[in-house]
Length: 234
Image 1 (cartoon, rainbow, N blue to C red):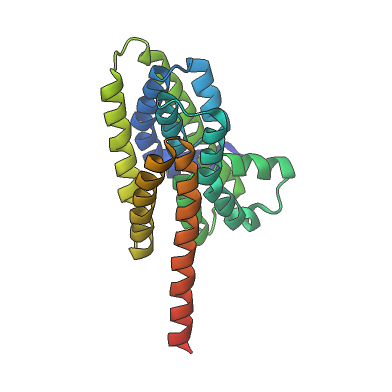
Image 2: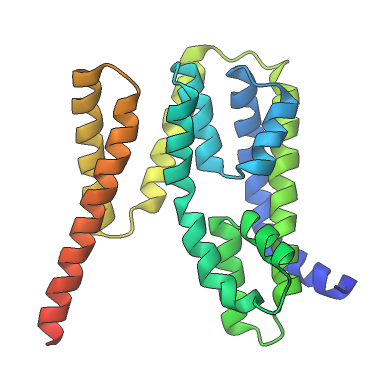
């Protein structure tokens, strides 16, 4: 692992890191306001390492959700990391098991996109540079959320403001994910089911059930589309 390779990886990922800093600071502040110590916030970033998941934890904590509900939601939200790790596994197959495990732990949507692009277009891109990109983004997020949590003690945010920020954040995350009709209709279905189940059950388990139902609905739409395209090609 040469210094030159690490610098190349850091150079490739630095635009992402500039985006992580304000997001991490905001996430840290919100988690601190939700009652988490800054050390717990940094440990959360170290182990979970997911912006959407950590914003969701802040929101669910304020709403009074239980630990099991949070764990289930985090599992479904971060499940895509398994697919991203599997997609890049063949690129690092000559590396050790420890390297592969840590590489998988430090993957996010952004670092996956950067590494996928560079592996396809840069002939000299290798596992070391890819790991450098991952670790740089990983470290930036951990430090940013930690600083945000420390600063959160001196920033007074009312529950109303906090909920507004979280809602705005999730609206942004939703809009950024809508790339086709399947995602759009899955989001619409999810919203409807969330309202219906929350009114029926009056419990945060409705969020978990909505996630499962929406996942199944999205899969149904995707399979239906694939079948239709198969018929047209045939």
